[in-house]
Each structure stands twice: as C-alpha cells, then as structure tokens.
Length: 455
Image (tube, rainbow, N blue to C red; front, top):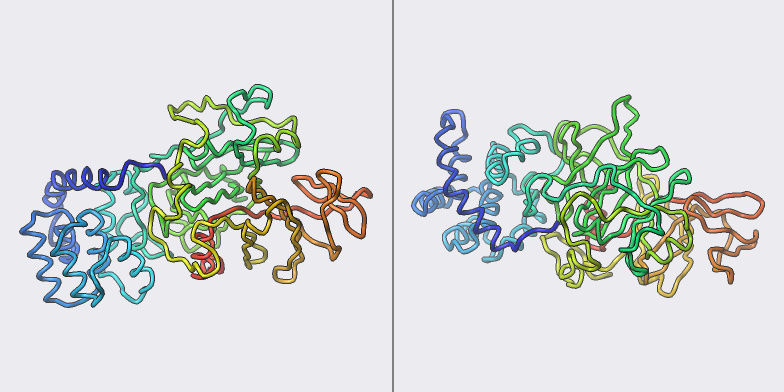
C-alpha cells in the first residue's frame, strides 16, 4: 500500500476522531451498546480525563479481554503513558511499541476480546472511512481474528484497481525500459504484460484474457502477485476485486464488489463477510515475472498495459515503494521465522493438492533447473534470480538440464520447448505449467506456519 507517513496519518486521524466521535456517541442509545464498547471507544478518542478514568476501570477489573481494544488504541495514541502502563499491568509484558504488541497478540490467540469487540472494531473503522461499514459491522462473519486486522493507511479503494485497462502493442510502448519488470500472462494465445512500475500504484487488475475473467491480486507489501480466475461457475457475473484498505499480517485484504466480503490475497479465500465459511477458493493461473526485454523477445506479439490509465500517478521506473523495496524491514507487523531466510528474501511458492512449498530465489542464480517433488507430484522449476523469474511444470521422471539452445530443456526423452503453457517435446508430448508465484519469505512463512493454506 502507498500512503502518507504513519505519524502524519495518525495525527490527522486522531484530530478527526476528537472532533467526530462525540457526535457518534450521542447518536447511539447507550442501553443498546455494551458498556465495554463505550469505555473502549472513550480510550481511543475521548478526552484525557475520560481515557484515564476508563483505563483505571480496566486496570482494576484486571481482565485481558480489553487488551485487543487497547492495542488498537495504542496505534493512534503511541505516547499515552497511562495507556501503555495499563497494557503492561494487564498482560505482565514489558512496555513496547504498537507493532510489537501486534506481534505479541498474534502469538497469543488465547487472549480473546470482549463480547461486542466487533462493534468496537466497526465503529473505529467507520470513523476512518464511513465506507468501511461495507466490510466491518456488528455480527460480521469472520475466519480470521478481527483484532489482527490493521488499517493500511488508505480508505476503501484508496489504491484504485485497473478494470479492463487499455492495452497497446509492444512497438508502441515507448515508455518501457528493457529492465522494467512485468507480470507476464498468456491464456489461450492472448499474451499480455502488466509492468510492475504501474501495478505498484494499483495492486489489482480485473481483466478478461483469452476469454477467461481474471484478477491479478498484487500485494506490494509481501512482494506477491497472484493471478486468480474470477468466474465462480455459479451463473453470475465474474467477481470484480478491489483493495479494501485493510491488512492482515502485513498482507492486503482484497474485497469483491458483489458481496463486499474480504478475501485473503495470499490464499484466495474469503475471510470476513458474507462468503466466509463457504468452500470458495479462487483458482490460480500461471503468471510470470520477468523483464520487458525478455518478455517481448519471447512474445513479440504481446500487448502491454497502456501508461494512460486514467489516473494521475508518477509511473516512472522505481518510483513507487522504492524505500520499502530497498529496506530489509517490514512496514507492518507480522511474525516470521528468519532462521532460514531473511524476512524479505524472495521465494517461489507452489501449491499442489493442498500442499505448499517454497524455494529461495537465490537457488536460481545465473539460471537454474531444479527438480523436486510435492505430495508425490514431480515438478520442474526453471528460474533466473536476476529477473525474478521462475516457471514451474509437472515432471515425468526425466532428468532435465538447460539446453544450449535458448528456450529449451534437454532430457533423456529429447529436447523440450519452454512455453507459457507447457514444456513441449518435438513429438507433441507436453508437461503442463503449474501456477506458482513469487513472494517475500515472511508472507509465505507466516501463512504456512499458521496452517492457513489447509483451512
């Protein structure tokens, strides 16, 4: 997500809260609102006297069910000594920042919020943006912890999706540089390139490629662009997705415009809202990251996203997120095991039959072929760390190696041509492409360790 500095955003938000909240509280019938909700709201946006009085009540009460609300309050009042001391008193933990409290909360699912926390969460969200009522409201169904949902610093659609964007022939794309990275997609002979320098500002496109409705869900924070089919096969129009403005463990929560359910970008499943609890899981399609020079060389008839998107943005190479991409630090809290890789090391992620595996992109330095097995399925990975490119194919038991001839592999069966759809032997035999994607290590590690892929 691209947004103004955290300190400035929080200061603006807090001033807005102080002006607006009393009107909201006056409009509510107190007898219909749980007392803990009202007291927690006063901690977030009430006067100093109201805040301190309610914190004293919480501390005397001695129960941890208010801790999730206090952690959210700390986001907007990081310098409140009384708030920080109350958190310390209730949990026995040392004083720490909001981000560290979020990590502690992720590690302690046994700390349950009070009944009515969904009301509290919804009220605070609606003060940031009234349109957030589409996503969070009293009684909303959810399969992830509401207390772990964090505001990303923008409003609903603050990062606008590109819906059926204009495409131009490669020869007319004079704005492109050879080393610009692109998301390359080819479906039923329809071959297209979506430059990351543009997608960094939009994080989502909804399009029809080769007759197939798809959406690219791109989370810049976790370095992951996943191509999903959006036709659910229910006889209704394909889903159209947008960016909600919310995050979960430093991963964007996208939403569909039909039901306004929130979806996990990384798993393709609805996690908050009407569709939560169903067996829906979006089907993935292969997508390739590579540089423009290689993509257009392999696909001279490709089209590419028109830089005239209808939005005013600086689409220059390396402009959006330059500081974040260059830093080893995360922008939002998420637990990660760094014993194997650093948090923002790139990995290639592949999921087959509910099983998942990741390979560090460093293993593809100078171009490599890796053969492996996932749940009994042999896989062939062809990659190049420099261009962040990995393609995966189903294996057949052959041993493969790079060919002296570009775009081919050699095996004991012969020479195989590398295409976006399959490895193709001269006699017509094919090994199908598998739909993997690139990601930062922390994103895959967090979800794989939590069992999110299996749920």
